[in-house]
Length: 239
Figure (spheres, rainbow, N blue to C red):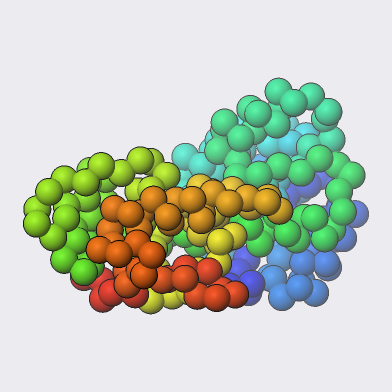
């Protein structure tokens, strides 16, 4: 999903709508605004919205109701804005289907970082839906079943994968022959941002190599790209 995607800002404070619209537009996004639930539905029906920035406190229907309605109807990205301090409201918002939240007052650069992260995840979900229609993938004589999460070796043996190993391998095969940074792989496979000392991806790659490679110290399936990250190199065939 490119940074020319549509973002809908829903807040009853017009000043906030205008400020966010101007800032995100300067970063290359196309931004729509609404001030209540009725306006949200009107814009959603009229435009192909990729991300909704939704205030928790709205007149009439609150943001929690609207987030649940949005998530039931689509996979659109949702960032909730809240002026409340209670953790429970944020938790409920996430449970209703929001992808992220940001307490008011917020810094515009932090909002931009969260927008980019959520839009990457939304794009990944869309790609996974298409790929999910093709449930089996073959690479280097290995077979990965994306539905059952099973892995068959070239000799036909079942190879057990942990949840983390499966999610990482699925991310690699879905983006075969692409160099994926550690941050990108963590976002794709664990759906969260990397911390400054996060070595989760390196550990999982090491485990996968021990299961997939004839010589894990000289890998031919999952290669390290110096300064870039990792790449699944064999041709991939979906069934």
